[in-house]
Length: 174
Length: 174
DNA sequence: CTACTCTGTTCCATATGCGGAACGTTCCGT
DNA sequence: ACGGAACGTTCCGCATATGGAACAGAGTAG
Image (cartoon, protein in one colour):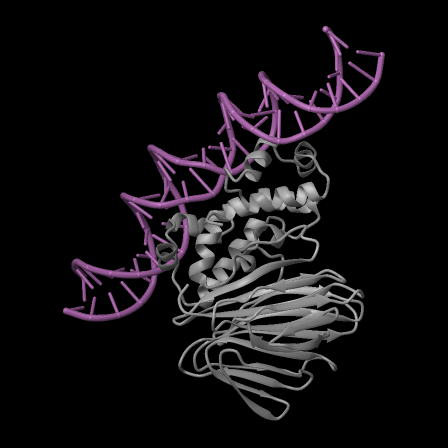
C-alpha cells in the first residue's frame, strides 16, 4: 500500500491474468510498450494517467478499478468483481460492485450475515440467479433484490459474459 | 475529456479553489513542486500516480475522485455525479453513475434520446423521483426503472443527501 | 514610493516514464 | 533434434514529468 503505483500494478496483473490475456497481447491492444507493462505490473514504475487509461479500456474495467484504494476480489476462473463504491452510514454499510461472470460459469455465494440484502442490475449478458429458493432469469436491464443471508448463486449462459452491478447492504456497524 | 490528465487537472483546480487553498499552499503541503501543480491544473501534463496521490491527501478526497472517467459536476449546489463505468456493446451503450443529490435539492433531467432507459438503485437518503408522469418515493434499497426519453427529475428530502446508483442504457452505437 | 509577501506562471537541469529492439525461456508442430 | 512462435524480462535512446529557481503581478504595511 506504500506506493499507489505498486498496488495498481498488482491489480493490473491480477485482472489481466483473470482475463487470460498475455502481457504481450494486452500491451499490443492497449498500444503501449511491453516494457512499460512489464515494469508497471512488477511495481517498478509509477505510471502516468495516460498509461493507466490505455490499459483500463482493453481490460474492460473502469479506470477507477485500477486506482482505487478499494479491494478487488479477483476471480477464480468463474467470476471477478470490482468494488466501485463503499459507504458507511449510521446503521448500515453499502457496497457497490461491478460483477463479471464468464460464459457458462456459475458463482455460488455462501450465506452472508443475517439482515444483508443484495440487489442486482444486469448490464449485459444472460443467465440465471438462484436466490431464496427461486430461479430468476437474468437479461440486460433486469433487476432483482433478495435476502442474502442464505446461499445464492449467479450463473451466466454460454452466450456471453454476464456483467452486472451488485449492491450489498450490510446492517450494523462499519 | 479527450485526455484523462486534462480532466483530472481541471478537477484538482476546482476542488482546490472550493477549499480556499492557494496553488502555492497546496504544492507545499503536498510536497510537490509548484510548477508541477500549475501545469497539471492547466492540463499541460499527464501526471504520475504518485503525484496525484500526493495531491489527493491534502485535498481530503479519495484518489478516485480525481481520476473518475467522466464529468464530475463539482460545486453545483444541487448535484454531483461520477461515472463509475461505461460499456459499449454491439447494440447499446451502458453507463453507471454514482449520483449525489443534496438535501432539499432537485435535479431535473431533460429528455434523453428515444429508447434510452434509466434505472435507479437508492443507497441512502430519501426523496422523490418524477418519471413517466408518476411520482415514486425514494428510500434506501428502492429500485425503479423508466423510459428516459421524457423529462424526469429526482429530488432529495431535507433530511439528508440522496445517494444512488444510476444505470443508463442508450441504444445504438457509441 | 518603497519594501515586503503573497499570488500563479515560466525556465531549466535532472530524473524517470516511454516504446522499440534486443534477450533468454518455454512450448508446440514438424 | 530442430525451427518457429509465443511468452515475459532487460537494455537503450528519446520524450517528458519533476522540483527548484527566477519571474511578473497584486495586495499590504511602513
